[in-house]
Amino acid sequence: MTSENPPLPFVCRKTPARSTQGIVVTNHPLGSVAGHEMLASGGNAVDAAVASLLALTVVEPMMVGIVGGGVAHLRLPNGEHTVYDCLSQAPAAATPDMFQPVSDRLPDYMETAGRRNLVGPSAVAVPGNLQGWCAMQKAHGALPFEDVIAPAIRYAQRGFAVTNYLASNIERHAEDMSKDPEISRIFLPGGTPAKPGHRLVQGDYAESLKLVAKEGAAALHGGALGRALVDRLATGGPDAGLVSMADLEGYTAKERDAIFGSYRGHDIVGPPPPASSGVHVAQMLNILEGFDLAAMGFDSPERLHLLAEAIRIGFEDRRAASGDPDFVDIPVEKLISKAYGEACRDRMLLAGGAGHVPPGYESRNTTHITVADRDGRIVSATHTINGLFGARFMVPGTGMIPNNYMYNFDPHPGKALSIAPGKRVPTSMAPMIVLKDGKPSFALGLPGAVRIFPSAMQAIINMIDFGMTPQQAVEAPRVWTEGAHVELEPAYAHHAEALTAMGHEVRVVPHIGGGMNAIAFGADGEMTGAACWRADGTVSALGGGLAGEGIAFHI
Image (cartoon, rainbow, N blue to C red; front, side):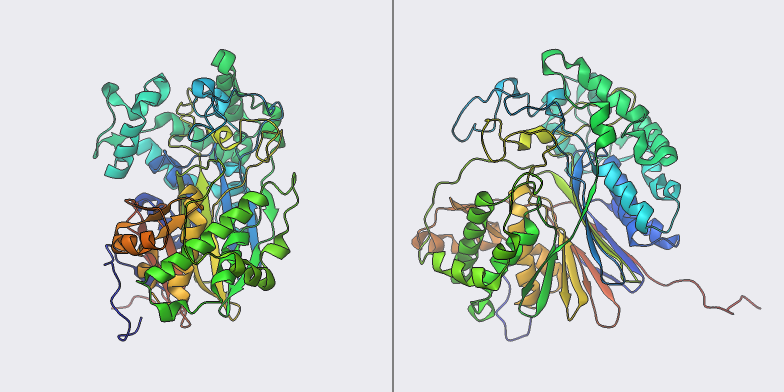
């Protein structure tokens, strides 16, 4: 921002890092270190990304695991974009009426009798993370897979210090985890939640990762780890899970084409359905492109009102046309067109007002990484086990925490998001890459369920309209709505009165979404990595390099 702009209503709490060799940004220091190790060992951004994600299954176990799902967006040096859809899906034996809903109304619309879709074996869907990571690394990595998984094995076997962030999440779900002796043994030592500084060792999981190092994804998708998972799910009695060995063997991580939109001379590239971000970030930006946001100023209630209206319309269209493209037709080209964005402006209200929002659920508990190397590879990836600690039990002898992805389906039969065999539910994951004149400008993403893609959209505006640095863009306050109340982060609290006067029902909340991270790309080849205050986000930048040819040590 120029010196003529008014001061921003926030101060950055973290600092960025710069490099020309490569950058790794994750939501845990050791996750970033694992990726850095790959870059320093001659690996590329894909090696670093997969190493980081595998490491995060150890050090951020409440958020992500090999028995989970997610979306990875890859850009190659030749400009090709590929999206790895590793999202979990319903088992073949799943039926629309497999759960008993407790209510047809909010706030308990998604809840079921005995919480069977949330906790325990019946909540587990067919995982995709490990297969997707292995497929991406095999196709595009440079290092042996055994090297890529080595940091994760080391962290699991030798242990690491529990952070405040992890400890608070353990405490939050200690009651559920206390019912399973396997997960309790790890996270509730002596029967109490692990405290900050406690050295968390996961010996069984280290052995599982060693098997993955030898067998790859087949260890889970048809091998001994898969058999252990299926056997544990079968012990649930009336709450037994439905995932079978055939489900695991038949799962495919799908390679999909990215969605390309545009905004003020930039290409906005994101994942396609079942992910919502590629479509609806492009749509919301098309709506807002008709307004001079920069002239309004960043710290303006009028601008926040426009953002809220664009987000509301995006969610309206998401509810009307979203889902697994193998099950529903989604008018992608219409939704991302400039003409449709212009037409949507007619739906914007001069005054806000809480409307009815149909029920739904997505996990708020994901992780995101952004990685780039000096040769032009970029990985922006968001992955999860859905809820905090997934289904909140551990597969005996393996250290694996299964997902609880079945909670994302509508438990009521006959609905758009009702359960069906092989179906994947829509996700708000937004691993975005933005281009200028065909070259990477920046990449970003974050965790946070339905708050993800509206937050990613705001960060894009921060960078393009307000010229923010990457650090400012990821740390800037956020606004969010689905069409009912409007949420503001504390740095926007001074606008609550003005927005209320505009007709909005305003709620000030501690944070909207989770820890965003980003990498920006300079014309001179320098990269800048940034992570925000909302998680343990850490940037690791590789500087220096090997000596040139002919350079030798002589005295």
